[in-house]
Image 1 (cartoon, rainbow, N blue to C red):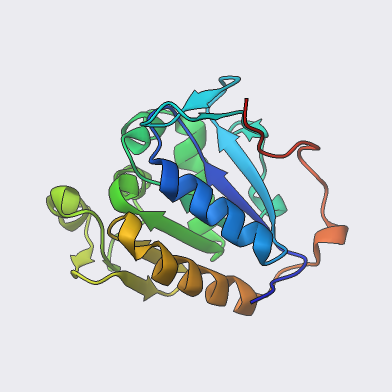
Image 2 (cartoon, rainbow, N blue to C red; image 1 turned 135 degrees about the vertical axis):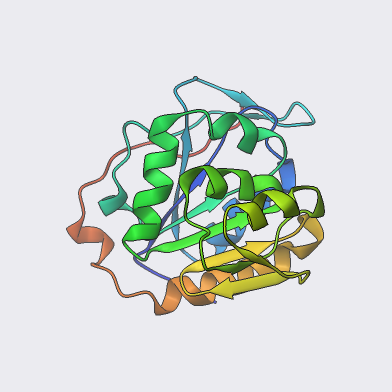
Length: 192
């Protein structure tokens, strides 16, 4: 599937789940989607397994108007990400504007903190089920759940279904062409 003239942000922080950042990153690139990695202000982040990622920008520098979608990966990074007001505001605004919002595994923590789960049907890693339910969501145990613009999955094994669903949602999401937008960064995700 090719999805041209779209831009998707992927949130990153230390202890991100390797597969849940890099699988979406390269799958989006394969679909000809522009990808920007968005951190919290550090110059480099290390995954759970020590894999480095240099972000393109930070949450306080990126504008929701410049993206068509957002992916929040899991690992332990969501517990750090949710502590940054700029991250929470970015997630809230992506959701408010009806842009495609994807969350996998422990990323549900960020959605809880952003208060975007009320009345939604979602899935997540089983350990945070109570958190998403207490945030107002209906939990279901499925590899992928789409509720409007929100796409959620449970774990790395679900990534193929997660990305198929995310790309389908992105393809049908009507937004302005990329060339008409103002770029917020000139870099791309790089490995050290």
